Amino acid sequence: MPAEILTTSSGASWQDVAADRQRYRDSTIAPLGLPSLKSQASSALLDTTSIAQSVLTAEELDITGRNVEDLIPLLASGQWSAKTVIKAFMRRAGLAQQLANCVTELLPERALKRAEELDAHLVATGQPIGPLHGIPISVKEHVGMKGCDLNAGFVGWVGRVAEEDAHILQILWDAGAVFYVRTTQPQALMHLETSNNLYGTTVNPYNTTLTSGGSSGGEGALLGLRGSVLGIGTDIGGSIRSPAANNGLFGFKPTSLRLPVMGWSATMAGSDHIIGTIGPLSTSLEGVRLFCRTVLAGRPWLREPSLIPIPWRENERYDRSAKGRKLRVGVIWDDGVVRPHPPVVAALARVVDELKKSNEVEIVDWDCWKHDLAWEIIAKLYFCDGAAEEKEGMTVSGEPMLPLTKWILEGPHVRQHTIQSLWQAHQERDAYRVSYAALWNERDVDVILSPAGPGAAPKLETARYWGYTSQWNLLNYPAIVFPTGTKVGSSDTSQVAHEYPEDYKPVSEADKYNYDLWKEHGAEGYANAPVSLQLVGRL
Image (tube, rainbow, N blue to C red):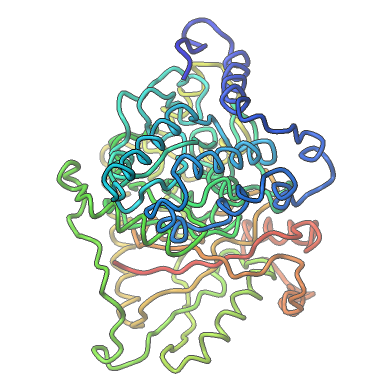
């Protein structure tokens, strides 16, 4: 972080502040000595995921090609030093910035200092410092890091500096983690894409005409390019799961008040109408498990008393004999509001077919109940001051409101509540939760398998349907996104088999919008986008 930060409060224009932030970001990457990839990043090459193969060394590719669970024993044994590993990931993160515009700053000095301390400890004691000894972890920008800018995507907030690391970072630090890069987020933190007036637009590395998702889209793109294998995102409507889905990753939204959030920066601080969560994005499922287990082992509820004091239950598994039946999976094919694009339906069908082969799984179709009402309720509770604080966050600098910001802040359900109308909205929220819980109890399913969105990664500026993810924020159910291993336009002929019927009639305005996007762009327009699904639980 530079000693002096250009801010609008000191008289600079928002454009000058943005240019200064970009110059600073570039200055943190320049010492790595990476070649310029401008020609490749701006060419007709849509899939940039393989470019690192021609730039990095064989050792760097080996290191950054490993998942968290592979790195842990290599670092703990000293086979690879923490310094060697963090250098490789910083170089790959620097490349990712050129290809996807996903980084707000690298942290080379503090990362290398930390790595050297870890290496010295291992040599002196013969023991790793903790379960994540030397593991590189990337961090979404609005999660506070001591001495670093904390702008939450607002130009006018540049210059706010975190006084200490966020609670979750302190726990991970004690476990041996190394923080080395901070990642982009959208204006107001409320897009399922990632664009702001400070850094521009973060794109999808598998197809640069598509979005990396949001609001943790910098994390999504960075992990998609393997500039990280474990990162921290946040989620109040899909902001972990959308980037995970769009980039073929694992992304977990825990139940609210499960993992510590103290030290993040956002509008609506103190609001408990819909509570945001924090969680991991990872290139592996094991990375998600290790992250959650490590954070909960730190007993965060002792410092953050609003958290639920439940430890990680490592050995609990589904006990078929105790229930006297198979694992029952409810399947959402269509939420009744927006029908998913054909590649998503095809992937869902394939996964269901595989599950049906197991004699321990029972599949039942899940008939969605009033998911349109769910969106109305949650949208009414997102901005209870009528989005006044978000608008002030932009007005103070004069920066323009971006199209997706305008779409969410000025939606038909946003209102400035009175105390009485807010009480009423809470009652509607709670009544919906009770009704949905009763439905779940009646149908007696264990988990729900669902699309992660209305399609694969959307075209830029078109992510306007949140229902497949925000539904579970409203209900406060945990949900994890996982890759299916297929991409749009792959050799999977079932994608064609699940095309819209020729006489298809959209069932809602949102469905028509989604349908029209597919008819305009088709499989070719979304080519190579990873197809992911979502699994929802209750605890």
